[in-house]
Length: 186
Image 1 (cartoon, rainbow, N blue to C red):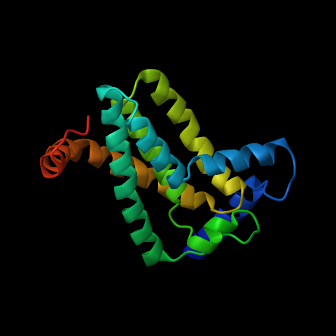
Image 2: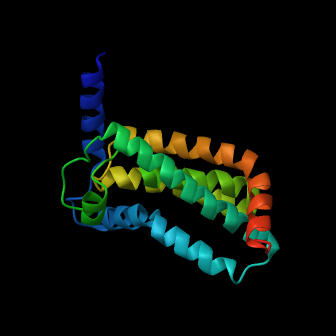
């Protein structure tokens, strides 16, 4: 199977999952889930929660925040190297205008990073919720026509890898950052 035929298969399968042009409950749910992985939402929520959390929660919030930040840089670098155009469509104008590239999916990468870090640092109930949520966000991005299936698969793999690496390197990085800024982050 050639690379071109793989891309055609990807486009065909992605099109079969698409609900962006079909009004109704499924479209509304997909739109909600597709937006629920937005980086601005997660960054704002984590910063706000940090001010009201105890030390255990603050650890999760700080690691998630810096994980999301680092992952954004990796995703953008790959997007500008690959430069795969998003699928044609009307929904998601903000994504189409601010980021015309689709590979890999930043939302899928972020959702899986959040789930992996949640598994390591958050209570079991939250980790469980995040592992249900992450694939739903990813599929919703395809359903709403702003990504191909391969974009979200690559994003999920990338987010998982970055999270696993982050779990290994965050302790010394937090020690360094705490010394630099002069107060503990949790």
